[in-house]
Every structure is written in structure tokens, then in C-alpha cells.
Image (cartoon, rainbow, N blue to C red):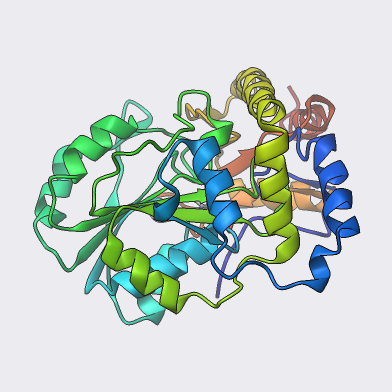
Length: 347
Ligand SMILES: Cc1ncc(COP(=O)(O)O)c(C=O)c1O
């Protein structure tokens, strides 16, 4: 069974990782412009020329190497099906869909676990060695990691993995919400690497579905172009992204900057409050935190009875029922969560 964060019935949902300041007000202005220009009455551009151009201008990369997708998740599906590896090595804990997809497609799945020392998780780059030289292996890293919130310097990661014969998928769904992560993709992505980006998290539009993948491998681009359904990104999402990146580029940059600053501050405050309650809070660079709480499942249930959803990490490899993931939301919403926990732990 697929397990995801996101609880539509909760009064307050800390279980899915959406930018707490999103969507920016301008999104609705742009959506209105798009609707008034009757985009829903047209097919999207099959080749997404303008969209690829707008994405590549914003992310400073080559438009020929961009494939827009219906959320980051479609990019993941397409890349894995097109690469057709014999084995998928996933740096775990990670987004659970990688394991589910591997198993469903009959691909051997191998977890490569983050190590833990002094109560912090870290990745030992040497651990890639065993898998690096096998052309039939796909190595997957979510960076920043979901659910750990750790970021591995992209250049360090690329220096290590670009020398491999194995192919590599780096899932950067949370880049815009991490102040130490480079937003730009640049023009020198190695041929064996696929980058996946999401525009649903930072823009706060998970229902619109928009993301893209980036690779400089011509062969892979051609395969994916044939595998994807012809109009895989709907015309409203297509129009929004084109208008947003072209007409509001500076506003978008400012919005990302403000979001990152807010998240950093609020994450620091919430983490400290939770530490004051005696919980182990792991260091994170993005818009969610991993917390270790004895009897975490009871806490999840108790909060849920109050209409508050947090993500139990019992389904994540290497974690378990004592771990929960909490998204950073607006200040007053975070205060409600802290107050509820304080009442239970009577501090
Ligand atoms: C690491 C990671 N990658 C991809 C996705 C899918 O994102 P999207 O909504 O853009 O499909 C998620 C969603 O939770 C995620 O956590």
C-alpha cells in the first residue's frame, strides 16, 4: 500500500511538506489571466517550447535538457522506466515511492542507509563504491533528504557520482525551501545524472501538479519524450509557469528568498521548543524536521484526535515508530502544535 503524508481531513496538517507562505498572491492573479485567455480550451503545446524556455531561463540551464512533468513524481516514474535499470540503490530513509516502484517493476531494490553518529545522520560517500561501477544500477539520492532534512553539498555529491558508470537520480524536490541549496541547475550536469525538481512544494500548488526533470543524456531525453503521454502537463499549469517565470521573475526570486528566511527562523524556533520538551530533534535545512519521540505512534494518534496530522515515520527505512516528521507551518499554527504537545508532556 502506498503511504504518503497529507491528510485532507485534518484541521491542521503538518504531515505534508508544503511551503507555509505559499501560494503567493500573484499565483491567483496569473491563474485568472490564464483562465481568461481560455487555455483550458486548448491542448498544451506538445513540445512545451515556451515552458522549457521559461524554466531554463529561471534555473539557468539548457532548455533542450528540460522535460516538464506532471509533478516531480511523474519525472521519477519516467526516468526509472526509461533508464530500465536492473537494480535501484536508494539512499534511505527516503521518499517511499522509490522502493514501491522498484518492486512493482521487478527491479532489484537495495537500500543504502545513512549512518548515525552522535545522534546525527550522515552519508558516507565511500558507501557508494560498491555500486558505482555497475552500468545497470540506478543510484537515487533525495537531496535535501526527505525525511531527514539533511543536505549533501551538490558539488561534492556530483564529484563523487559523476565518475560512476551507474546512473544517478538526484531528487531535489525541496531545493527552493532550503537556503543552502543552489536553485540554479547550471549547464554542466554530468551525462549519467538526472535531476528531478518539483514546483508543487515551494509554490504551494500540489493540486496543480508541476515539476520537471533535467538530463544532458540525449538518449535518455529521446526515450522519455516517447514514453511520456503527449500532453503530460495540463495547459493551466503550463500557462502559470510560463507567465510566472517570464513576467514575475524578480517576484518569484523574492518569494523564494522570503520563504527560505521564514522557514529557517521558524524551524529554529520550533526545534528549540520541541527540545525543551525533551525530544530529540535532528538538524534540518529545509521545511520539515525529524523528531524522535518515545512512543511516537501514540503521539501521532493523540494529535490526530485533536485534528492535527503529523507524519509517522514507521514506514521509512532505518527509522520506525519512534520517529515523526513535522512540516514547518505558520507561526500561530506551529504554536498550536507545541501547546498540544506541552499539555501531553505537562511541561
Ligand atoms: C522527495 C520527494 N520527491 C518527489 C515528491 C513528489 O512531488 P510532486 O508533488 O511534485 O509530485 C515528493 C512529495 O512528497 C517528495 O517528498
